[in-house]
Image (tube, rainbow, N blue to C red):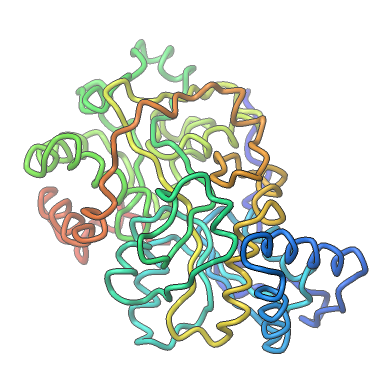
Length: 389
């Protein structure tokens, strides 16, 4: 019998803000090592802009003394990145894990007075919606020079990429063999009748991953054909999970046979002991996410928020991902790619030329069209299949 997941990591932090500091929420003074790391980060960033640029920012950020992060990556990864920021700079750092669409909805409703300062992780379609709605601060980051390409940042400098992940399928090979079914190889294969009730996808009301799936199909097939596709696919979907990583967690234990999502989430499950999972890059093409970070307009701690972005664009932040269950491909030139991801030989080249601007302008409308095609609305979607908790 395959290994079950031992526990759901740090579930309580998804319900309430968690402090990264010492017991009682108090933050101890930075250690000598942490102070040295801060100087190293500052010097590295200053190679193009001068060390005075970030030295002044660090002092201003420390004067503010606090930072609140909404994170849309996995909990373990988020906690580690926040803890390391606090260790390096001595700035009390709180975080809450929310799916990307949840963050967008929450900040939208807060009317320019966001309850967090920065956003970290998660696919950029909801970030682009936030840009279009004027919810993100434009900031010309010194450490953006570390990006391997300008395609990994917003054209207005409202968000910066930190990693990318390829969209695909994860299948339970044992269940497929037991049922006498072939492995799906293309997006259209997923609509075959034999897969009825065997598929899980995330809920576009709460997960940016599902929004990316919708945008990808529209860009590959055209709007109307994509909506017809989702009608057929829906007949085979047993459940739409709250989180984009939700389907990946169900494949190994056999709670679903085919999960649609990011393949680095499948890598995590395989490395947890589920060697009955196969990762599939669709033969007819797919797209990739850019995991990002950004500052909210109206942030209570704007200098600490800017320092966070500078930090997020350095190896200090991204290289610890692989130590905390996150195996995305990194988009910083001075980062170290996780060997755990490289060993699976995923084809990162079989991707479409994703139209980020179309996604920025139309994602909200496309989600409405998706639910309408399925015979409901985003508000009235069946709570039994479209999970929000």
